[in-house]
Image (tube, rainbow, N blue to C red; front, top):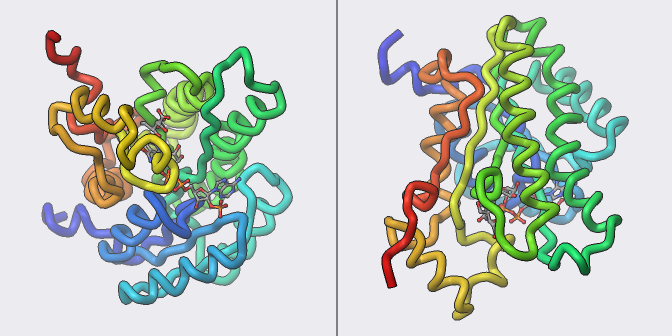
Length: 260
Ligand code: NAP
Ligand code: GCO
């Protein structure tokens, strides 16, 4: 296969969870531009509809579904509907996620459970629904959107770090258990990216400068920075990459920080 063709996704169906906007939208758009049929979901129908229109503005005919990734019956029904209406899912991107920034001692166990449910149980539920079709089809790609918090902790993000640390190990376990079926499962670990999820950390906040100082690239990432790495992990170019977390962080994890 030519090197150019190995990065193409023509003939593939890609499902990106939580892709009405943000990182998921950027990943799904890139996969669409690489030739994949785009399918995505979200919890809010008005945002899913807005997402479909936004993809169309990019010349992409994306299929949007309203589905909460923590609702196992809804996920099963959505997966069956996609397989009937569009085809077997070749690429699954577990992108949907939330964060709650609360000091651990002040965090309710309900809030803790909600973050872990969406950020960790969601990818488990989605992968369980999609893998049987991938096995039937002879292989597939699963990409779990991890985080700096898959490796690092910081104040107020205990639930999120626990979930994203768990997602790193779920990634490695899916790779271990289903690699024999030509399924590659890898993680994508974005650094600090300018999306709605981080808006309260930016816009003149001291944290914005803190991250700039901690990042060798000396900038916040853009959702578009995830596009190329995601297409790589979804393509034949990464067929022998399995159980790997690809960090896209401008060098943050490699850097101890400048001596004051
Ligand atoms: P975002 O702007 O808040 O978008 C999150 C997306 O997930 C939205 O489309 C949201 O749609 C969807 N979602 C949330 N809960 C859902 C559920 N239960 N079922 C289905 N969809 C759900 O966040 P983002 O910055 O794009 O982040 C996307 C992913 O990257 C997340 O997993 C996040 O943890 C991770 N990440 C972000 C950064 C960053 O700096 N931004 C860095 C590393 C990793 P609805 O609310 O409409 O359902
Ligand atoms: C935070 C941020 C981070 C980023 C991302 C970093 O509060 O520290 O939200 O968690 O979202 O996960 O990779």
